[in-house]
Amino acid sequence: MDPSKNQTILDPDRVSGMILAAGLGTRLFPLTQFRPKPTVPFLGKPLIHYSMHALLESGIKSAVINLHYLPNKIREAARSFSPSTSLEIDFSPESKILGTSGALCHAEKLLKGREIVILNGKIYSEIDLSLALDAHRANDALVTLVVLPFPPKANFNPVRVSKDGAVLGFGPSNLGTPTLFTGIQIWNREVLLNLPEGPSDSVKDVYPSLIEKGQRIYSHLSRDYWCECSTPDRYWRSSMEVLRRHLKRTSHVSCMDPSRENVIRGTKVEIEIGSQVEDTIIWEDVIIQKDCLIRNAILCTGVRLPRNTRLENVIVTPLFNWTSANRTHRPQVENDFLIWPLDC
Image 1 (cartoon, helix red, strand yellow):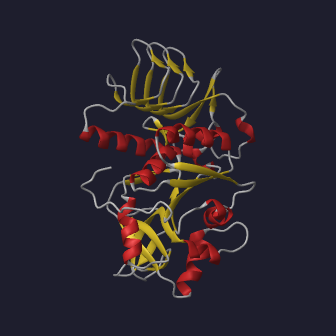
Image 2 (cartoon, helix red, strand yellow; image 1 turned 90 degrees about the vertical axis):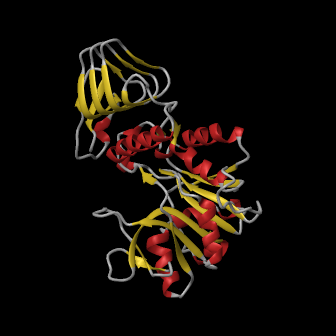
Image 3 (cartoon, helix red, strand yellow; image 1 turned 135 degrees about the vertical axis):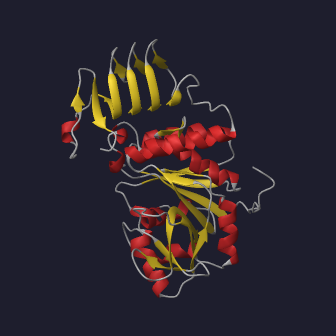
């Protein structure tokens, strides 16, 4: 932790974290055919590790992770982070997906804090959570939503805020200023008393009612870097962007192939002589044989590309029964792998 930052000294019993990781990740298909979205590798680490690190860096010592789709893979990823840290993890399995606020209600007995910092397992963020907690307390807020300035032409549902940061509503409106919701939220524990039974979403089902009742729902405007990986194209673009950000700070990034242009590679990757690979994410256990040309691609675990393969703007996966997936795009079927458009 950087001591020069305005870090909040936390009573361990005061704040706990909640990482939302139960989703099916349908928009990230076909990558999520093989692993849940929070465990997809992002610069060599499971995405969920970045949320876990953010909690720990702000002084939070305990967190709950909800589970549904491929739960054991999320357990494994979380446990691969926790042994070397003091972040205590509990898991909250869901037999059906409960939504943002439904997940919190279901996990209530596991959440130890009087304040709850909620993160999404699909994001990469450099936002300082301790500053958001400071703002939450300074505003005496019941809920604080961490937001960013709204990007031009962004295709996101805006959070509309007043000049003093109060949340006025969501979606297109003439009210206040549009901001971009990061998915990072801070709740006082009393919010759990206002939740409906069963599945529910905080933005759609909880916050409008609280705002109507005059409850103190505030925003914290951050200008730190944040990105999300909801689709394969966004995942690829965000990975390349964050790689370039890291390279500005240091000449070496551990997951980068130093001999190639913007190549992020996992373990047990073999690229044979004569192959050119650029702007590509390579997961673990991949072989690229001689004289291939690969650009703007994602190669999933277990892929074997024969010599002289030419691919651009694609995802390559091992063979699986893709016909059961209700998808607009169909893959090109090869002997040992499937080729999907990057924007599928």
